[in-house]
Length: 589
Image (cartoon, rainbow, N blue to C red):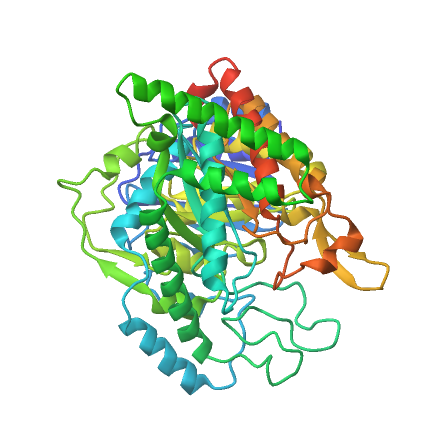
Protein backbone atom coordinates (compact mmCIF):
# COMPACT_ATOMS: atom_id res chain seq x y z
CA UNK A 1 0.00 0.00 0.00
CA UNK A 2 0.95 3.61 -0.46
CA UNK A 3 2.15 5.50 2.62
CA UNK A 4 -0.84 6.48 4.68
CA UNK A 5 -3.12 4.22 2.66
CA UNK A 6 -4.71 2.50 5.64
CA UNK A 7 -5.72 5.77 7.25
CA UNK A 8 -6.85 7.17 3.91
CA UNK A 9 -8.86 4.02 3.19
CA UNK A 10 -10.77 4.55 6.40
CA UNK A 11 -11.50 8.14 5.49
CA UNK A 12 -12.48 7.24 1.95
CA UNK A 13 -14.78 4.50 3.15
CA UNK A 14 -16.52 6.73 5.68
CA UNK A 15 -17.02 9.46 3.08
CA UNK A 16 -18.33 7.16 0.39
CA UNK A 17 -20.76 5.47 2.74
CA UNK A 18 -22.75 8.67 3.24
CA UNK A 19 -24.74 10.49 0.58
CA UNK A 20 -24.24 14.17 1.40
CA UNK A 21 -27.37 16.13 2.13
CA UNK A 22 -25.56 19.42 1.64
CA UNK A 23 -21.81 18.98 1.60
CA UNK A 24 -19.02 16.82 2.91
CA UNK A 25 -15.68 18.21 3.97
CA UNK A 26 -12.67 15.95 4.41
CA UNK A 27 -9.33 17.19 5.64
CA UNK A 28 -6.29 14.93 5.44
CA UNK A 29 -2.81 15.85 6.58
CA UNK A 30 0.62 14.46 5.83
CA UNK A 31 -0.40 11.82 3.28
CA UNK A 32 0.60 11.21 -0.28
CA UNK A 33 -2.95 10.79 -1.54
CA UNK A 34 -6.55 10.41 -0.58
CA UNK A 35 -9.85 9.49 -2.18
CA UNK A 36 -13.27 11.03 -1.76
CA UNK A 37 -16.56 10.12 -3.34
CA UNK A 38 -17.80 12.24 -6.22
CA UNK A 39 -21.60 12.58 -5.89
CA UNK A 40 -21.93 13.35 -9.60
CA UNK A 41 -20.67 9.88 -10.61
CA UNK A 42 -20.82 6.34 -9.25
CA UNK A 43 -18.84 5.61 -6.09
CA UNK A 44 -15.85 3.46 -5.37
CA UNK A 45 -14.93 3.12 -1.74
CA UNK A 46 -12.83 1.19 0.72
CA UNK A 47 -10.42 -1.48 -0.54
CA UNK A 48 -11.75 -1.33 -4.11
CA UNK A 49 -10.88 2.33 -4.31
CA UNK A 50 -7.35 1.75 -3.07
CA UNK A 51 -6.84 -1.15 -5.45
CA UNK A 52 -7.74 1.32 -8.19
CA UNK A 53 -5.29 3.79 -6.71
CA UNK A 54 -2.50 1.24 -6.76
CA UNK A 55 -3.28 0.11 -10.32
CA UNK A 56 -3.28 3.64 -11.68
CA UNK A 57 -0.35 4.99 -9.76
CA UNK A 58 -2.31 6.78 -7.06
CA UNK A 59 -5.25 7.77 -9.25
CA UNK A 60 -8.69 6.50 -8.33
CA UNK A 61 -11.21 5.12 -10.77
CA UNK A 62 -14.56 6.92 -10.79
CA UNK A 63 -13.51 9.09 -7.86
CA UNK A 64 -11.55 12.27 -7.47
CA UNK A 65 -8.02 11.99 -6.09
CA UNK A 66 -5.90 14.87 -4.85
CA UNK A 67 -2.22 14.54 -4.06
CA UNK A 68 -0.71 16.56 -1.26
CA UNK A 69 2.81 17.23 -0.16
CA UNK A 70 3.75 15.77 3.21
CA UNK A 71 2.74 18.21 5.89
CA UNK A 72 0.35 20.08 3.60
CA UNK A 73 -3.37 20.27 4.14
CA UNK A 74 -5.90 19.72 1.38
CA UNK A 75 -9.65 19.88 1.75
CA UNK A 76 -12.21 18.80 -0.85
CA UNK A 77 -15.79 19.86 -0.39
CA UNK A 78 -18.41 18.05 -2.45
CA UNK A 79 -22.10 18.99 -2.60
CA UNK A 80 -25.21 17.42 -4.10
CA UNK A 81 -25.24 19.93 -6.91
CA UNK A 82 -24.20 23.35 -7.98
CA UNK A 83 -25.79 26.41 -9.49
CA UNK A 84 -24.32 28.54 -12.23
CA UNK A 85 -22.82 30.95 -9.71
CA UNK A 86 -23.22 29.05 -6.47
CA UNK A 87 -20.67 26.35 -7.14
CA UNK A 88 -20.45 24.02 -4.17
CA UNK A 89 -17.53 21.95 -5.36
CA UNK A 90 -14.29 23.42 -4.11
CA UNK A 91 -10.70 22.70 -3.29
CA UNK A 92 -8.84 24.15 -0.33
CA UNK A 93 -5.07 24.15 -0.02
CA UNK A 94 -3.30 25.21 3.12
CA UNK A 95 -6.62 26.01 4.77
CA UNK A 96 -7.68 28.38 1.98
CA UNK A 97 -10.84 27.33 0.17
CA UNK A 98 -11.01 27.83 -3.56
CA UNK A 99 -14.10 27.61 -5.73
CA UNK A 100 -16.89 27.88 -3.16
CA UNK A 101 -17.08 31.63 -2.64
CA UNK A 102 -19.75 33.69 -4.43
CA UNK A 103 -18.52 34.64 -7.88
CA UNK A 104 -18.81 37.98 -9.65
CA UNK A 105 -16.99 39.40 -12.68
CA UNK A 106 -14.76 41.33 -10.27
CA UNK A 107 -14.13 38.64 -7.63
CA UNK A 108 -10.73 37.93 -9.24
CA UNK A 109 -9.52 41.20 -7.71
CA UNK A 110 -9.42 39.52 -4.31
CA UNK A 111 -6.92 36.89 -5.52
CA UNK A 112 -3.19 37.03 -6.21
CA UNK A 113 -2.72 38.08 -9.83
CA UNK A 114 0.27 37.24 -12.00
CA UNK A 115 1.40 38.79 -15.29
CA UNK A 116 -0.81 41.88 -14.95
CA UNK A 117 0.68 45.29 -15.75
CA UNK A 118 0.75 48.04 -13.13
CA UNK A 119 -1.05 51.12 -14.43
CA UNK A 120 0.33 54.37 -13.00
CA UNK A 121 -2.97 56.20 -13.56
CA UNK A 122 -5.57 54.20 -11.63
CA UNK A 123 -8.31 56.80 -12.15
CA UNK A 124 -7.94 56.66 -15.92
CA UNK A 125 -7.98 52.86 -15.80
CA UNK A 126 -11.26 52.94 -13.85
CA UNK A 127 -12.81 55.26 -16.45
CA UNK A 128 -11.74 52.98 -19.29
CA UNK A 129 -13.11 49.91 -17.51
CA UNK A 130 -16.42 51.72 -17.01
CA UNK A 131 -16.43 52.56 -20.71
CA UNK A 132 -15.87 48.93 -21.70
CA UNK A 133 -18.89 47.90 -19.66
CA UNK A 134 -21.12 50.13 -21.81
CA UNK A 135 -19.96 48.69 -25.16
CA UNK A 136 -21.66 45.81 -27.02
CA UNK A 137 -20.14 42.39 -26.50
CA UNK A 138 -17.82 41.33 -29.29
CA UNK A 139 -19.37 37.86 -29.64
CA UNK A 140 -22.83 36.58 -28.71
CA UNK A 141 -23.79 34.02 -26.07
CA UNK A 142 -25.52 32.00 -28.82
CA UNK A 143 -22.28 31.66 -30.80
CA UNK A 144 -20.37 30.81 -27.61
CA UNK A 145 -22.85 28.00 -26.89
CA UNK A 146 -22.48 26.79 -30.47
CA UNK A 147 -18.73 26.37 -29.98
CA UNK A 148 -19.40 24.62 -26.65
CA UNK A 149 -21.47 22.04 -28.52
CA UNK A 150 -18.74 21.45 -31.08
CA UNK A 151 -16.14 21.01 -28.33
CA UNK A 152 -18.45 18.54 -26.60
CA UNK A 153 -18.36 16.58 -29.86
CA UNK A 154 -14.56 16.76 -29.82
CA UNK A 155 -14.62 15.36 -26.30
CA UNK A 156 -16.43 12.30 -27.70
CA UNK A 157 -14.15 11.94 -30.74
CA UNK A 158 -16.74 13.35 -33.15
CA UNK A 159 -14.97 16.62 -33.97
CA UNK A 160 -11.44 17.92 -34.37
CA UNK A 161 -10.27 21.46 -33.67
CA UNK A 162 -7.70 23.38 -35.65
CA UNK A 163 -6.77 26.44 -33.58
CA UNK A 164 -4.19 28.86 -34.84
CA UNK A 165 -3.08 32.37 -35.50
CA UNK A 166 -0.81 35.10 -34.27
CA UNK A 167 1.41 34.84 -31.23
CA UNK A 168 0.60 38.47 -30.44
CA UNK A 169 -1.74 40.55 -32.58
CA UNK A 170 -0.73 44.16 -33.13
CA UNK A 171 -2.54 47.40 -33.88
CA UNK A 172 -0.97 47.28 -37.33
CA UNK A 173 -2.36 49.02 -40.39
CA UNK A 174 -2.02 45.66 -42.19
CA UNK A 175 -4.62 43.95 -40.01
CA UNK A 176 -7.01 43.42 -42.94
CA UNK A 177 -4.39 41.71 -45.12
CA UNK A 178 -3.28 39.56 -42.21
CA UNK A 179 -6.86 38.52 -41.39
CA UNK A 180 -7.53 37.56 -45.01
CA UNK A 181 -4.41 35.40 -45.18
CA UNK A 182 -5.13 33.71 -41.84
CA UNK A 183 -8.75 33.04 -42.82
CA UNK A 184 -7.68 31.30 -46.03
CA UNK A 185 -5.04 29.29 -44.17
CA UNK A 186 -7.51 28.04 -41.55
CA UNK A 187 -10.04 27.21 -44.28
CA UNK A 188 -7.45 25.37 -46.39
CA UNK A 189 -6.31 23.39 -43.35
CA UNK A 190 -9.92 22.46 -42.61
CA UNK A 191 -10.38 21.32 -46.22
CA UNK A 192 -7.28 19.12 -45.98
CA UNK A 193 -8.38 17.55 -42.69
CA UNK A 194 -11.93 16.93 -43.89
CA UNK A 195 -10.68 15.14 -47.01
CA UNK A 196 -9.96 11.99 -45.00
CA UNK A 197 -13.45 10.63 -45.63
CA UNK A 198 -14.30 10.70 -41.93
CA UNK A 199 -17.57 12.17 -40.70
CA UNK A 200 -15.70 14.02 -37.97
CA UNK A 201 -16.51 17.73 -37.83
CA UNK A 202 -13.65 20.16 -38.34
CA UNK A 203 -13.86 23.20 -36.08
CA UNK A 204 -11.81 26.32 -36.79
CA UNK A 205 -10.77 28.59 -33.93
CA UNK A 206 -8.56 31.56 -34.70
CA UNK A 207 -6.07 33.19 -32.36
CA UNK A 208 -7.59 36.41 -33.59
CA UNK A 209 -9.61 39.48 -32.55
CA UNK A 210 -8.18 39.60 -29.05
CA UNK A 211 -4.70 38.05 -28.78
CA UNK A 212 -3.15 41.40 -27.92
CA UNK A 213 -1.57 40.61 -24.53
CA UNK A 214 1.42 38.39 -23.77
CA UNK A 215 2.86 36.94 -20.55
CA UNK A 216 6.58 37.35 -20.12
CA UNK A 217 9.19 35.28 -18.33
CA UNK A 218 11.00 38.38 -16.98
CA UNK A 219 9.78 41.85 -16.00
CA UNK A 220 12.54 43.57 -17.98
CA UNK A 221 14.14 42.84 -21.34
CA UNK A 222 17.81 42.59 -22.31
CA UNK A 223 18.03 46.39 -22.58
CA UNK A 224 16.71 46.90 -19.06
CA UNK A 225 13.34 48.21 -20.29
CA UNK A 226 9.97 46.83 -19.12
CA UNK A 227 9.27 43.70 -21.16
CA UNK A 228 6.85 44.21 -24.03
CA UNK A 229 3.47 42.81 -22.92
CA UNK A 230 1.50 43.44 -26.09
CA UNK A 231 -0.09 46.38 -27.87
CA UNK A 232 -3.08 46.27 -25.53
CA UNK A 233 -0.74 47.29 -22.68
CA UNK A 234 1.88 49.60 -24.23
CA UNK A 235 3.98 50.26 -27.30
CA UNK A 236 6.87 48.06 -28.37
CA UNK A 237 9.05 51.13 -28.98
CA UNK A 238 12.32 50.78 -27.01
CA UNK A 239 12.00 53.57 -24.48
CA UNK A 240 10.61 53.87 -20.99
CA UNK A 241 7.77 56.21 -21.86
CA UNK A 242 6.47 53.96 -24.63
CA UNK A 243 6.61 50.94 -22.31
CA UNK A 244 4.41 52.62 -19.67
CA UNK A 245 1.03 50.81 -19.45
CA UNK A 246 -1.69 52.96 -21.02
CA UNK A 247 -5.36 52.24 -20.14
CA UNK A 248 -6.60 53.84 -23.39
CA UNK A 249 -5.10 50.90 -25.25
CA UNK A 250 -7.86 48.66 -23.86
CA UNK A 251 -10.35 50.66 -25.91
CA UNK A 252 -8.05 50.51 -28.94
CA UNK A 253 -7.92 46.72 -28.56
CA UNK A 254 -11.71 46.59 -28.49
CA UNK A 255 -11.94 48.60 -31.72
CA UNK A 256 -9.32 46.44 -33.47
CA UNK A 257 -11.02 43.25 -32.29
CA UNK A 258 -14.37 44.51 -33.53
CA UNK A 259 -12.86 45.31 -36.94
CA UNK A 260 -11.26 41.84 -37.16
CA UNK A 261 -14.59 40.19 -36.35
CA UNK A 262 -16.24 42.20 -39.11
CA UNK A 263 -13.49 41.03 -41.48
CA UNK A 264 -14.24 37.41 -40.54
CA UNK A 265 -17.97 37.83 -41.14
CA UNK A 266 -17.35 39.27 -44.60
CA UNK A 267 -14.84 36.55 -45.46
CA UNK A 268 -17.25 33.82 -44.31
CA UNK A 269 -19.80 35.28 -46.73
CA UNK A 270 -17.45 35.79 -49.69
CA UNK A 271 -15.45 32.56 -49.31
CA UNK A 272 -17.87 30.13 -47.73
CA UNK A 273 -16.32 26.98 -49.23
CA UNK A 274 -13.03 25.78 -47.70
CA UNK A 275 -12.12 24.33 -51.09
CA UNK A 276 -11.97 27.83 -52.54
CA UNK A 277 -9.32 28.76 -49.97
CA UNK A 278 -7.39 25.56 -50.66
CA UNK A 279 -7.30 26.40 -54.37
CA UNK A 280 -6.11 29.94 -53.60
CA UNK A 281 -3.23 28.65 -51.49
CA UNK A 282 -2.41 25.94 -54.04
CA UNK A 283 -1.87 28.68 -56.63
CA UNK A 284 0.12 30.75 -54.13
CA UNK A 285 2.41 27.78 -53.44
CA UNK A 286 3.01 27.24 -57.15
CA UNK A 287 4.31 30.81 -57.51
CA UNK A 288 6.46 30.72 -54.34
CA UNK A 289 10.00 29.93 -55.43
CA UNK A 290 11.25 28.89 -51.98
CA UNK A 291 8.57 26.26 -51.31
CA UNK A 292 9.48 22.58 -51.54
CA UNK A 293 8.13 21.14 -54.79
CA UNK A 294 6.90 18.06 -52.93
CA UNK A 295 4.44 20.19 -50.95
CA UNK A 296 3.30 21.96 -54.13
CA UNK A 297 2.60 18.61 -55.82
CA UNK A 298 0.89 17.14 -52.74
CA UNK A 299 -1.53 20.08 -52.46
CA UNK A 300 -2.15 20.14 -56.22
CA UNK A 301 -2.89 16.41 -56.24
CA UNK A 302 -5.24 16.80 -53.29
CA UNK A 303 -7.11 19.64 -55.01
CA UNK A 304 -7.32 17.66 -58.25
CA UNK A 305 -8.65 14.59 -56.46
CA UNK A 306 -11.32 16.58 -54.63
CA UNK A 307 -12.32 18.38 -57.85
CA UNK A 308 -12.72 15.04 -59.62
CA UNK A 309 -14.89 13.84 -56.75
CA UNK A 310 -17.02 16.98 -57.10
CA UNK A 311 -17.48 16.31 -60.86
CA UNK A 312 -18.57 12.73 -60.17
CA UNK A 313 -20.98 13.85 -57.47
CA UNK A 314 -22.45 16.53 -59.72
CA UNK A 315 -23.14 13.94 -62.39
CA UNK A 316 -25.26 12.01 -59.90
CA UNK A 317 -27.20 15.09 -58.83
CA UNK A 318 -25.27 15.72 -55.60
CA UNK A 319 -23.70 19.11 -55.15
CA UNK A 320 -22.49 19.10 -51.55
CA UNK A 321 -19.15 17.48 -50.70
CA UNK A 322 -18.07 16.01 -47.38
CA UNK A 323 -15.77 19.02 -47.01
CA UNK A 324 -18.72 21.41 -47.18
CA UNK A 325 -20.73 19.38 -44.68
CA UNK A 326 -17.94 18.46 -42.24
CA UNK A 327 -16.28 21.86 -41.87
CA UNK A 328 -18.17 24.08 -39.45
CA UNK A 329 -18.95 27.24 -41.42
CA UNK A 330 -18.04 29.78 -38.74
CA UNK A 331 -14.55 30.70 -37.58
CA UNK A 332 -14.61 31.11 -33.81
CA UNK A 333 -12.30 33.49 -31.97
CA UNK A 334 -9.96 32.89 -29.04
CA UNK A 335 -7.18 34.39 -26.99
CA UNK A 336 -5.42 33.97 -23.69
CA UNK A 337 -7.51 35.52 -20.91
CA UNK A 338 -4.54 37.44 -19.55
CA UNK A 339 -5.47 41.11 -19.14
CA UNK A 340 -8.32 40.74 -16.65
CA UNK A 341 -9.48 44.39 -16.56
CA UNK A 342 -10.26 44.03 -20.28
CA UNK A 343 -11.95 40.66 -19.83
CA UNK A 344 -14.06 41.85 -16.90
CA UNK A 345 -15.21 44.90 -18.86
CA UNK A 346 -16.67 42.64 -21.55
CA UNK A 347 -18.52 40.18 -19.30
CA UNK A 348 -22.25 40.22 -20.04
CA UNK A 349 -25.22 38.64 -18.27
CA UNK A 350 -27.52 36.73 -20.64
CA UNK A 351 -30.94 35.25 -20.01
CA UNK A 352 -31.12 31.79 -21.47
CA UNK A 353 -33.79 29.14 -21.64
CA UNK A 354 -32.89 25.80 -23.23
CA UNK A 355 -36.44 25.20 -24.51
CA UNK A 356 -36.62 25.27 -28.25
CA UNK A 357 -32.86 25.42 -28.72
CA UNK A 358 -30.60 22.63 -29.93
CA UNK A 359 -27.78 23.43 -27.51
CA UNK A 360 -29.29 21.82 -24.42
CA UNK A 361 -27.36 20.81 -21.35
CA UNK A 362 -28.69 17.26 -21.67
CA UNK A 363 -26.85 16.96 -25.00
CA UNK A 364 -23.65 18.51 -23.66
CA UNK A 365 -23.76 16.31 -20.57
CA UNK A 366 -24.00 13.07 -22.53
CA UNK A 367 -22.11 10.29 -20.74
CA UNK A 368 -21.07 12.69 -17.99
CA UNK A 369 -23.28 11.55 -15.14
CA UNK A 370 -26.53 13.06 -13.96
CA UNK A 371 -27.44 16.33 -15.71
CA UNK A 372 -27.32 19.39 -13.51
CA UNK A 373 -29.46 22.37 -14.48
CA UNK A 374 -26.84 25.07 -14.88
CA UNK A 375 -29.04 26.97 -17.31
CA UNK A 376 -32.00 27.67 -15.02
CA UNK A 377 -30.63 31.11 -14.15
CA UNK A 378 -29.04 33.86 -16.24
CA UNK A 379 -25.40 33.18 -17.06
CA UNK A 380 -22.35 35.34 -17.40
CA UNK A 381 -20.41 35.21 -20.67
CA UNK A 382 -17.01 36.65 -21.48
CA UNK A 383 -17.93 38.27 -24.78
CA UNK A 384 -14.35 39.20 -25.70
CA UNK A 385 -14.05 35.84 -27.53
CA UNK A 386 -15.76 32.49 -27.96
CA UNK A 387 -12.94 30.50 -26.35
CA UNK A 388 -10.53 31.70 -23.66
CA UNK A 389 -7.56 29.90 -22.20
CA UNK A 390 -5.36 30.20 -19.13
CA UNK A 391 -1.65 30.11 -19.79
CA UNK A 392 1.03 28.08 -18.08
CA UNK A 393 2.17 31.13 -16.10
CA UNK A 394 -1.29 32.07 -14.78
CA UNK A 395 -2.99 28.77 -13.92
CA UNK A 396 -2.40 29.03 -10.16
CA UNK A 397 -5.32 27.29 -8.45
CA UNK A 398 -5.95 30.17 -6.06
CA UNK A 399 -5.00 32.83 -8.62
CA UNK A 400 -6.98 35.62 -10.21
CA UNK A 401 -7.17 34.08 -13.68
CA UNK A 402 -8.64 30.78 -12.51
CA UNK A 403 -11.07 32.70 -10.31
CA UNK A 404 -12.25 34.82 -13.24
CA UNK A 405 -12.77 31.96 -15.67
CA UNK A 406 -14.56 29.67 -13.22
CA UNK A 407 -17.60 31.96 -13.31
CA UNK A 408 -18.03 32.61 -17.03
CA UNK A 409 -19.94 30.16 -19.20
CA UNK A 410 -17.55 30.08 -22.17
CA UNK A 411 -15.66 26.93 -23.05
CA UNK A 412 -12.17 27.39 -21.64
CA UNK A 413 -8.72 25.89 -22.00
CA UNK A 414 -5.73 25.41 -19.73
CA UNK A 415 -2.16 25.18 -21.03
CA UNK A 416 -0.12 22.39 -19.41
CA UNK A 417 3.67 22.27 -19.56
CA UNK A 418 5.89 19.45 -18.41
CA UNK A 419 5.70 20.98 -14.92
CA UNK A 420 1.98 20.23 -14.60
CA UNK A 421 1.13 17.72 -11.87
CA UNK A 422 -1.79 15.39 -11.41
CA UNK A 423 -3.01 17.24 -8.35
CA UNK A 424 -2.98 20.53 -10.25
CA UNK A 425 -4.96 19.12 -13.16
CA UNK A 426 -7.58 17.51 -10.91
CA UNK A 427 -7.93 20.64 -8.80
CA UNK A 428 -8.30 22.82 -11.89
CA UNK A 429 -10.97 20.49 -13.28
CA UNK A 430 -12.83 20.57 -9.96
CA UNK A 431 -12.88 24.37 -9.91
CA UNK A 432 -13.36 25.13 -13.59
CA UNK A 433 -15.74 22.31 -14.54
CA UNK A 434 -17.45 21.04 -11.37
CA UNK A 435 -20.44 19.65 -13.30
CA UNK A 436 -18.03 17.66 -15.53
CA UNK A 437 -19.73 19.00 -18.65
CA UNK A 438 -18.13 17.88 -21.95
CA UNK A 439 -16.84 20.78 -23.99
CA UNK A 440 -16.39 23.10 -21.04
CA UNK A 441 -12.71 22.29 -20.34
CA UNK A 442 -9.89 21.75 -22.83
CA UNK A 443 -6.43 20.65 -21.69
CA UNK A 444 -3.75 21.94 -24.08
CA UNK A 445 -0.39 20.22 -23.73
CA UNK A 446 2.77 22.24 -24.47
CA UNK A 447 5.53 19.99 -23.17
CA UNK A 448 8.14 19.13 -25.79
CA UNK A 449 8.85 15.57 -26.92
CA UNK A 450 10.80 14.39 -23.87
CA UNK A 451 8.36 15.69 -21.27
CA UNK A 452 5.36 14.65 -23.38
CA UNK A 453 6.61 11.08 -23.59
CA UNK A 454 7.30 10.97 -19.87
CA UNK A 455 4.42 12.96 -18.38
CA UNK A 456 1.42 12.71 -20.71
CA UNK A 457 0.63 8.96 -20.67
CA UNK A 458 0.09 8.69 -16.88
CA UNK A 459 -1.67 12.06 -16.80
CA UNK A 460 -4.00 11.14 -19.65
CA UNK A 461 -4.69 7.71 -18.15
CA UNK A 462 -5.48 9.29 -14.79
CA UNK A 463 -7.88 11.81 -16.28
CA UNK A 464 -9.65 9.13 -18.31
CA UNK A 465 -10.00 6.73 -15.39
CA UNK A 466 -11.29 9.45 -13.08
CA UNK A 467 -14.14 10.15 -15.52
CA UNK A 468 -13.21 13.75 -16.23
CA UNK A 469 -14.76 15.00 -19.46
CA UNK A 470 -12.05 17.05 -21.17
CA UNK A 471 -10.89 17.81 -24.69
CA UNK A 472 -7.22 17.01 -25.24
CA UNK A 473 -5.35 19.34 -27.59
CA UNK A 474 -1.68 19.61 -28.48
CA UNK A 475 0.33 22.81 -28.72
CA UNK A 476 3.59 21.56 -30.28
CA UNK A 477 5.05 25.05 -30.59
CA UNK A 478 5.79 26.58 -27.20
CA UNK A 479 8.12 23.98 -25.71
CA UNK A 480 10.26 23.99 -28.85
CA UNK A 481 11.40 27.61 -28.77
CA UNK A 482 15.13 28.24 -29.04
CA UNK A 483 17.42 31.24 -29.48
CA UNK A 484 19.87 31.46 -32.38
CA UNK A 485 22.24 34.03 -33.85
CA UNK A 486 22.83 34.63 -37.53
CA UNK A 487 26.22 35.44 -39.07
CA UNK A 488 25.67 39.15 -38.40
CA UNK A 489 25.21 38.54 -34.69
CA UNK A 490 21.45 39.17 -34.72
CA UNK A 491 19.56 37.11 -32.13
CA UNK A 492 16.23 35.45 -32.94
CA UNK A 493 13.74 33.27 -31.15
CA UNK A 494 12.80 30.44 -33.46
CA UNK A 495 11.39 26.92 -33.66
CA UNK A 496 12.39 23.91 -35.71
CA UNK A 497 9.55 22.48 -37.80
CA UNK A 498 10.86 18.93 -37.36
CA UNK A 499 10.61 19.22 -33.58
CA UNK A 500 7.08 20.60 -33.92
CA UNK A 501 6.13 17.66 -36.14
CA UNK A 502 7.70 15.16 -33.77
CA UNK A 503 5.70 16.46 -30.81
CA UNK A 504 2.46 16.46 -32.78
CA UNK A 505 2.94 12.87 -33.97
CA UNK A 506 3.86 11.71 -30.48
CA UNK A 507 0.68 13.30 -29.13
CA UNK A 508 -1.38 11.19 -31.54
CA UNK A 509 0.51 8.05 -30.59
CA UNK A 510 -0.13 8.65 -26.90
CA UNK A 511 -3.84 9.40 -27.35
CA UNK A 512 -4.19 6.22 -29.38
CA UNK A 513 -2.38 4.14 -26.76
CA UNK A 514 -4.57 5.56 -23.97
CA UNK A 515 -7.81 5.22 -25.94
CA UNK A 516 -8.53 8.95 -25.71
CA UNK A 517 -9.77 11.11 -28.61
CA UNK A 518 -7.23 13.55 -29.99
CA UNK A 519 -9.32 16.70 -29.86
CA UNK A 520 -7.26 19.23 -31.74
CA UNK A 521 -4.07 21.09 -32.53
CA UNK A 522 -3.04 24.57 -31.36
CA UNK A 523 -0.56 26.47 -33.55
CA UNK A 524 1.09 29.85 -33.74
CA UNK A 525 1.07 30.53 -37.45
CA UNK A 526 0.74 33.21 -40.11
CA UNK A 527 -1.02 33.08 -43.45
CA UNK A 528 1.89 35.00 -44.92
CA UNK A 529 5.40 34.06 -46.07
CA UNK A 530 7.18 34.99 -42.86
CA UNK A 531 10.61 33.57 -41.98
CA UNK A 532 10.42 32.84 -38.27
CA UNK A 533 10.61 29.03 -37.92
CA UNK A 534 13.41 26.84 -39.25
CA UNK A 535 13.12 24.13 -41.88
CA UNK A 536 9.83 22.79 -43.12
CA UNK A 537 8.46 23.32 -46.61
CA UNK A 538 10.43 26.53 -47.10
CA UNK A 539 13.73 25.07 -45.82
CA UNK A 540 14.25 28.25 -43.79
CA UNK A 541 17.79 28.50 -42.39
CA UNK A 542 19.18 30.69 -39.62
CA UNK A 543 20.55 33.18 -42.16
CA UNK A 544 17.03 33.51 -43.67
CA UNK A 545 15.30 34.58 -40.46
CA UNK A 546 16.03 38.30 -40.82
CA UNK A 547 14.36 38.45 -44.25
CA UNK A 548 10.76 38.41 -43.01
CA UNK A 549 10.76 38.10 -39.23
CA UNK A 550 7.68 40.16 -38.33
CA UNK A 551 6.36 38.56 -35.12
CA UNK A 552 5.80 40.90 -32.18
CA UNK A 553 6.78 38.12 -29.80
CA UNK A 554 7.24 34.40 -30.57
CA UNK A 555 8.01 32.76 -33.94
CA UNK A 556 5.14 31.53 -36.15
CA UNK A 557 4.90 28.93 -38.87
CA UNK A 558 4.51 30.50 -42.30
CA UNK A 559 1.63 29.41 -44.53
CA UNK A 560 3.67 26.75 -46.35
CA UNK A 561 5.09 25.27 -43.14
CA UNK A 562 1.58 25.20 -41.66
CA UNK A 563 0.18 23.40 -44.71
CA UNK A 564 3.01 20.85 -44.58
CA UNK A 565 2.20 20.20 -40.92
CA UNK A 566 -1.50 19.88 -41.80
CA UNK A 567 -0.75 17.17 -44.36
CA UNK A 568 1.13 15.27 -41.65
CA UNK A 569 -1.80 15.90 -39.32
CA UNK A 570 -4.15 14.45 -41.93
CA UNK A 571 -2.00 11.31 -42.08
CA UNK A 572 -2.12 11.04 -38.27
CA UNK A 573 -5.92 11.35 -38.28
CA UNK A 574 -6.24 8.69 -40.97
CA UNK A 575 -3.88 6.41 -39.06
CA UNK A 576 -5.94 6.93 -35.93
CA UNK A 577 -9.19 6.23 -37.80
CA UNK A 578 -7.76 2.95 -39.04
CA UNK A 579 -7.13 1.66 -35.52
CA UNK A 580 -9.71 -0.79 -34.15
CA UNK A 581 -12.50 1.03 -32.28
CA UNK A 582 -10.61 4.33 -32.64
CA UNK A 583 -13.73 6.28 -33.50
CA UNK A 584 -15.55 4.94 -30.49
CA UNK A 585 -12.90 5.93 -27.95
CA UNK A 586 -14.53 8.18 -25.38
CA UNK A 587 -13.60 9.69 -22.08
CA UNK A 588 -15.32 7.44 -19.61
CA UNK A 589 -14.60 6.02 -16.20
